Image 1 (cartoon, rainbow over the protein chains, first blue to last red):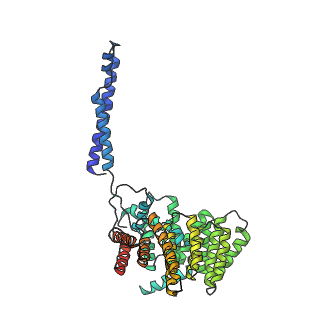
Image 2 (image 1 turned 180 degrees about the vertical axis):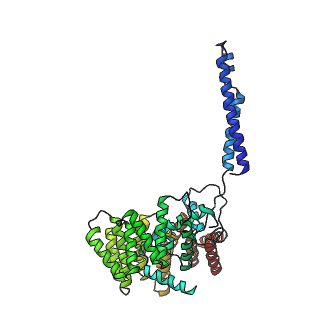
Length: 139
Length: 300
C-alpha cells in the first residue's frame, strides 16, 4: 500500500466516522425536540441533512480510490533460473481470460501440465542417478 | 533466497506441483536441492502441512537423484513413521529405495508381490496405478530391445485406467519414438479429450503432424502434394488452438512459424507468429527470450 493510498484511506475512514457521528447527533436532537408539527413542510426538516449524505458519498468514493491505489503491479518469479529477474506485465489484476491467464505460466517458464507431460511417475531412476553422478565427477 | 520467503515459496510450490524436478539438468538439481534444504530449515508461517509434505516428497527424490541414499532413507523412515507403509507415495518411495539399495529385479519382485497379494484385491486403485507405472518403466529398462513389450504393458494398463492422462502421454511418446505418427497422434488426441484445455498437448499433436508432413514431402510420392497440404493444415489448426489457449506459448508460435513457412497462402499467419515471437523476446523469462531470438534469427 503506497503512502498516497494510506493517506486517502485514513481521510475516507475519518470522514465516514464523522458522517456517522453527525447522523447520531442529528437523531439525538430530533428525539429531544418536543413540538413535532405534522405539517409536510416541517417534516422535511426532520430528514437527514444533505451535507451529511454528501459526506458519506464522498468518503465512500475516497475509500474506493484509495483501495484501487493500494494495488501493486503483479510480479512473477521465474522458476528455472533463480537468478532471473522478476517479471512484470505492468498489470494490477490477474487476467480472467484463459489465453492471457495462462501467460503467467509462460512468463515464469512453467508447464502447468508438467505433472503429465514430464511423466513424473515413469522416470528412470537409475539413468537419472547415473547422469547426475557423471556431472558431479566433473565439478 | 533473494526474493524473500513469498517468492521462494511460490517457486517451490510451482516446481512441486508441476513435478519439474524430475526433468531438471544435474546442475539445476543440485541448486534446487541446496535451496530446498535451506528453505525447509527456515520457519515460514505461510507454509501449510500439505505443502510441507509435498516438499519432503520432492526432497526425497532429489536426494535419490544426487545419490544421497542415507539421507533419502531417513526421510522415508520419518514419513513412514508418521503415515504408515500403506500409502501410494510411500509405496513408490520404498520401491525407489529397493532400486537403489538393491537392484531393479528386487524392486520388480516387490511390486509384483504387492499387486498379486494386496493391491489386486484392495480398494486403493491409485497405489496400483503408481506401482504399475513404475513396473513398466523398470521392465522397459530390462527389455530395451523390445519396445513392443513396453507398448503392450502400457495398453494393458490403459485398459484398466482409460482416463489416466499420463499413460496416454507415455504411450504417445513411445509411438512417436518408433516413428508411428498416426498411433502417436491418436494417443495425444485421447489426452486432449480428457483435458480439452491442455495447450501443450495441442502443440505436441501439431509437432507430430508437421513431422509427418515433412516425411511425406521427402518421399516424393505421386499425388503427395495434396496429402502434404492436408496434413500441414491439420498441424496448423492444432498449433493455432494451442496459442488460442495460451497467448505467449513459445512452442505454439514456433510451430505456426515453421508450418506457415511451408505453406504459400498463409503469409498473414507467418507475420503474426513472427510478431508474437518478437513479443516473447521482450517480455518473457530469459530462457524463452533466448530461444525465441534464436528461432527468429534462423527463420529470417
